[in-house]
Image: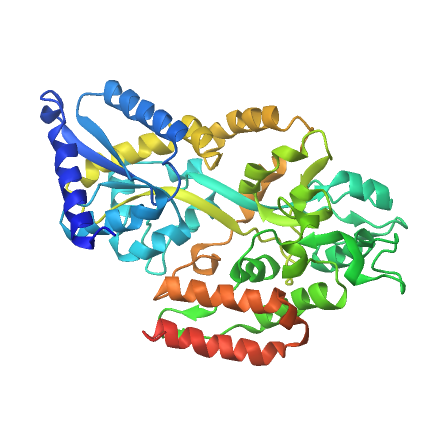
Length: 462
C-alpha cells in the first residue's frame, strides 16, 4: 500500500518537473496549465488528440504556452488535484468535467463574468438556457457551455411496429397519435399508457391483459436508463430539495408525486424493469441495448453503448415527454472546462478557455464523444455519429432539446453540502425503490426518512 504522503510528494514532484520541461522559448510566454482527468480525457486516443490541441494552440500565437497535465486515471484525479491546490500550485484550467464532478471543488472555481466582459466574449453564440446552467444563485458564472447531453427518448422502432403503435413525435410540442387516431399530449401519462401495450410476457400477453404474467415478462415498455433518483425526479418535474439560504432539505410535493408515478410503473403496471429484471440476462448489455425494451429516457451520452444494435434492431430518438406541469423541460448532463481561483494568470487562462470552447471544440468533442454546445460545431458531430449509426436517426431532436435545458439551481446534479454523502443516500433510496422490497414500501414514510437523513448530511452529520 502506498502511503498518502508518498503520493503527495510524487504529485508535487511531477508538477515541478512539468514546469521544468517547458522550453527556453516557452519561458518567454505566459504559462497556462490545463489539468485533465477529473472527468473524461485519460484514455490513449483522447490524450493524443488533446496533445494535438495543445500543439495547435501554441503554434497559433506567441504569448501563451499551454502545458497539459493529465492525471494517471479518473480514479486518482481527485486526490491529485486536491494536492496541487493545497500546495498552492493549482492548475489554471480543469476539464472537461461534469456538474457532479465539479462539486467536490465547488469553492475553487473562478467567476468568469468579469473575464467574459473584459474580453468581450460573446455568450450569445450558445443557447441562453445552457449558459444559465452555469449561473449560480449569487449571479456568478462558473462555466461556459462546452459539451452537453440532453435527455432524450430512445425508442425501439421494431417493437413499436410489432405492437401496431405509432412512433413518438419527432418534434417538441407535437402530439402523440394513439392507435384509434386520437391525438394526446406527449407526456409521461401517455408514456405510461403505451408502455403497457409494449410490455409483453412469454405467452404474448401485454400488460393491458388480465392474463399478463409479470413474472414472465420478456419485453418492457420503458425505463430511465442508468438514472439516479434525482435525474428521474427532474425528468418528471424539475425542482430541488435543497435551499442554500437556509441550509435545509425539503422534498417537494411534485417529487413525492413523481416517486409514486415511478413506483406505479415498477410495481403496479410492471412496465418498467425492477432491479432484478434490470440485472437479468434479458436486459443485457443494458436495458435498451438488449432490444427487449421499447423506450428509454436517457441522456445523449448513451450513444456510447449501442453499437451492438446495428444490424439487430432499428431505433430512433424523440423528445422527452412533457413534465407534470405540462411544460417541456430537458434534464441536461453537461461537461465543461473550469478556471480555478488559484490561477496565477486568469486572463491568459481565459484566452485558452475560449480556444477550447470554440476553435478546438469540434476536435475535442469528437475525442470525448460529446455533443458540442457550440451550434457551429454540431454538424460535424452529427456527421460523425451518423457514420457510427447509419439508421436515419433523428439527431435534430438533440439540437432542439438545448433550448429547454433546466437552469443551474434545479439541475439534477446541483451541489449540496457533503455532496458525496448525499449522492450515496440518493443511491440507497433508489435501490430501495427498485429492489424487491420496494413493492410494499410506504412511499411518504420512506421519503420522510430520506429527507431527515439528507438534512443531517448537509448539516455536517452523516
